[in-house]
Length: 288
Figure 1 (cartoon, rainbow, N blue to C red):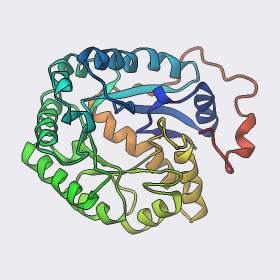
Figure 2: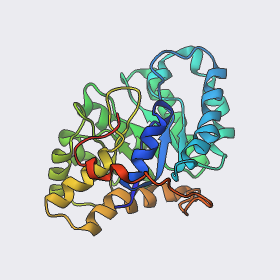
Figure 3: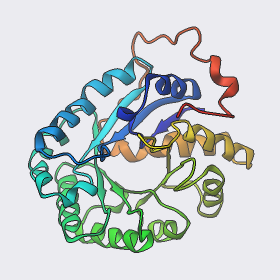
Figure 4: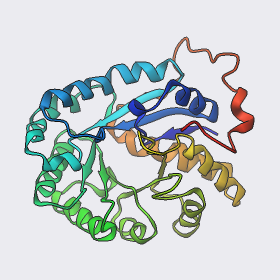
């Protein structure tokens, strides 16, 4: 099983996670810029973070045989803080960097006027830089927020095929399916989606434009949820080709629109002797 995790926050994870991910078949990932868990108070704190995404974290992933890419944006939660608004002015220089494959995460947290403005401006940046957009749907009032998201996407003029609407669930997948945007699902231990619910959605809607991610971060999450979803698909009767489409070909097709994906094997990388020793227990647990 080859896996491209299209949404995972490796800055929050350990080297053990990288080893477990490689062992499970992860060979590439996208790390979206996101909220670190406490307010950032200056533009400099963002630029330091962005620099780490395009530099240090890319290097760290490579030590474990995984190609690292990222998305850059002012995230929805911090769009409400006036101290962070100047971040929009520095985004263009980061959106031109190698390894930056989309503008994101953008979208809504509380659906405020400030979020409206920042969302609209960043979709315009995606159009100007010919990049896809990764969109975060709100945790509260998710259906209303998803509908509002799709209205803003339509008004922006961006091609819906360049938009991935993430963190979807059963009530929201239908409207995004009809919109022509890509559909993203975060598989979590307790919240968002689980493997069995994801399988049911795939049975109903098919595998086209479907993106599955772990969205693992500093909270309770599991960087092997993509792998476990693949296993659940196989157990439910999906073919290996179906699994490959959802876990590899779909994210490659979406982020490949940036023309910045690098997916060849890392030169000189040799897995350690015990890299795959944990394969026998991967079905039952993960490094969280």
